[in-house]
Image (cartoon, rainbow, N blue to C red):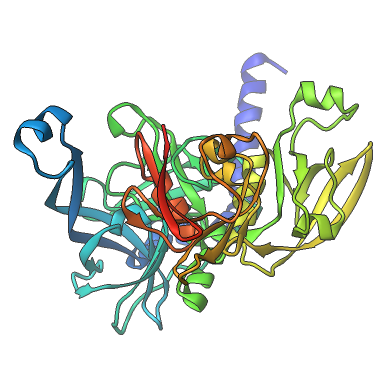
Length: 453
């Protein structure tokens, strides 16, 4: 056979293969069965886009500025100036329950908003009520009252694979609804310092300012994630965007609906990522997962039989890449949730069933909140006068927490003049504080301030 004939045979074979598989392709949501139409995402998007809304917010931001000592000396007055500035913002949201009018968005889209307006794709506008939010995972739940809404069905985000196609739907730069496409670039992304709990889907679908809170969907038009962040100079799209997985979002939203807040699960371990050096030191062939450095006494982990030196490689049958991924998945699950952990102990694979504790009542280690608090175990409690606060339930001698002046049974009631009553509130205030942190502490019948620099 001549060279030209061989080329013709290859082209003919490939063309024939395409035509013989066309019935299967036409079954996909973005392919039309009409031979006169070209392949398109339009049929799927016509069903999905009405579930993605535009969100406009108005509110007031409070800015605090320290007054220099010299000015206070000469002119007197307070040691700080407080200014209130009005702001407006735009973002996106996703309808997840058409009957109840539930809309999910990012917390940073609606944070501190006094008025929240939701606009549908058909032009209708509604005032939205904020049902609850979780700043650490950047999720907020809104509700509107309307008929004729369209909701996105949820996909199992744990089934995602790198290379799966993605479509981002949102309202970038205040423009009307915009659709971009790409693939799943990576899974389980963490360590980005975007939020307190990070387990992101990474995608190269173009995500820009205003897309926050919008939908990341698969080719079936199912919600796989909530677009939340971009990564690039100047805040522009460079082909790297991040979304909160739909499973993580659903777990958090379910808790907000039931309790009005997120009640995090608590495993009760301190740990780190397993790497090649640590794996060699532990004589293990595993180089991905979460290494347990310490198990907190009387925690869910201890009750389930977890031990220091164990390497957790999977949660509920899903492989783990890092300790941060384990932390984010556990934190998104509610207290009392039963999970199955697969771990390696001295070269042997084991499975342990764990019933998660309540992170709202006790935190395994305060070092998760701030490095200077390492060595303290916190619990929701109250002072001698019955004022709610964060109790120092346990304190390690000569630890960083002890060195800043904390003592066992101290009760923290404020941070930087802001009242805190629970560990969740305490964590949120600490994470949003820059520079010096002043802890207002009740010790017996006295009040004092301890400073973290």
